[in-house]
Length: 275
Length: 299
Image 1 (cartoon, rainbow over the protein chains, first blue to last red):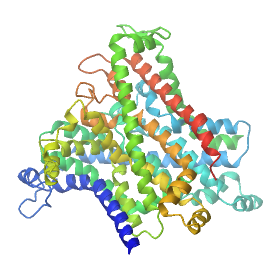
Image 2 (image 1 turned 120 degrees about the vertical axis):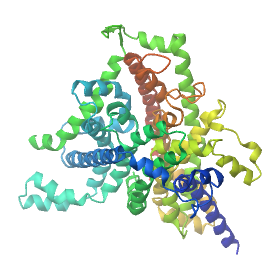
Image 3 (image 1 turned 45 degrees about the vertical axis):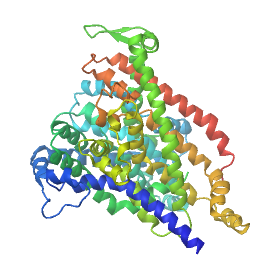
């Protein structure tokens, strides 16, 4: 009996904290579907037949740029993710597999970026992008995000590669398979489970970043969704329907993807955290 | 050799050009000053003297620095204990709905700081009145204040919003470490008649000390680099009266300029280098002071 009571206590604590975590988000999303009067009159009520309204969404989605912002965020994030994974896996493989002079030093050099935020070099990055004529391009963001994501990706992937049984590569070597083919045909396919871990640590921060879009690509054609929403809200700050709808437009896609992949993402995070 | 270059080349080149080189270039820029025509002149450590001694620079710098320390203390005192407590509960054996709790509590961490900032700005706004109504429901209506607008409470409020968002990180890292505690140790303690509570504090917690050290240094680096949340809630001026100014917003304002002053790349570089040194000191204390001592107890 006493045990049951204690289990109940633990669950009520966890439920309470879960509510604290999600209620503010639900509040924003829920009220974005209501008429202005209901947003202020009954903010805690679900939208009903009388109070339902999409007026905010009409304004936000009617803004022709929202589509461009989404496309920018998507392309920057996906290309950065691809290059981080490819370059990161190749470097991690070389560091884990081949012993060469200075390999420890190189590993140390690459790991500086885990602790030292790339933002601190922003001024020189901006100057460099101006010189290269890359300001207001998606390429500028992709290059910076690749450099930002690589250290952590290399760290995670080398841990992962060192756990792959040696026999696999040795067998391929005996068959005379060239080294490059060993990596792309034997090792790379085995790295799939590590992608979730890399995603949590590199992709989520890229999608959510405000700093570099603000600095390197504030132009209307190259804004990411995070920056676009930030500017949109700045313009319509008193129009609560539009503000809530704009926030929801940014929240809902991430939320849906997160709920679909949450199991892989979280197991990826806990697996990557083992060391 | 060619093979090594093929595998390592792309990563090392991109990382060196776009991460390491800008950092070094920024540090070197901090020893220059620019005149009205934009030409650079070497001035040695003059910019640092300005930052630490000159009245116009010293006050905002120390203000941002002390605010940043407060911001860090709030995270260490609230975020990490909550993260440890929830991880401890989630790792209890035979707990139902474990996955659901994890997913829900981690949700805010996935969302953009900007979106979170605006959402809380609305929720805490006296205009909407939702928090006031909420407090009234519990008979606490008299306690409501526009927390984000008051000089005395704005920084703490922003700190707590950040805690609310990022509690998922320590939670997950510590949860993973707790799962790795050898079950023989826990079983042995169980047979000796220790309660779950005693096992957590006397067996598990000392064993996961290295992870708690890691969480602390990640919190430190993240906090002393924070910018987005203050910027999205309060703008670059970090009001009211700079009470929410952090080193990140101070750096941004100095570099880009604002209503009050012209932007200065060289002073911006000086502040960025100062931030780098602060983070470096923190990381060194962690690597040589804390981690080395903790490693001895790890398994």
